[in-house]
Image 1 (spheres, rainbow, N blue to C red):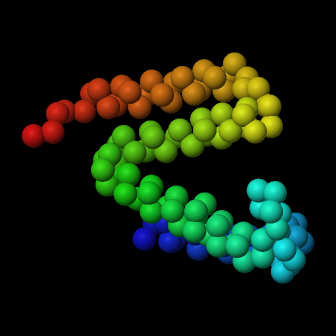
Image 2 (cartoon, one colour):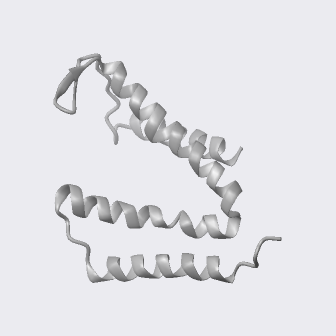
Length: 121
């Protein structure tokens, strides 16, 4: 329910920002370049909707159920860590010392929480 509410609020904000002209809302049915090949426009839409959105939400919800809310909340912080690593790899943007320190703290917090959890019966 919380995920659906967040998606609804995000959608409303994007539409409002588009209506006032701060965000261009345009669509095209032109073919797309996908990994060096040409594909129909709808292939990109399906990939974004299925992989980047639906699969991410479903695996996230399943992970919270398996990890527990406390550990999952800290694991969720690793999203920023992976964004920094992705930028480093994909566009050669080197992480700053502050970003590295933050990443180390997130990983240490996850390890500490996991270590401090009581063993399962």
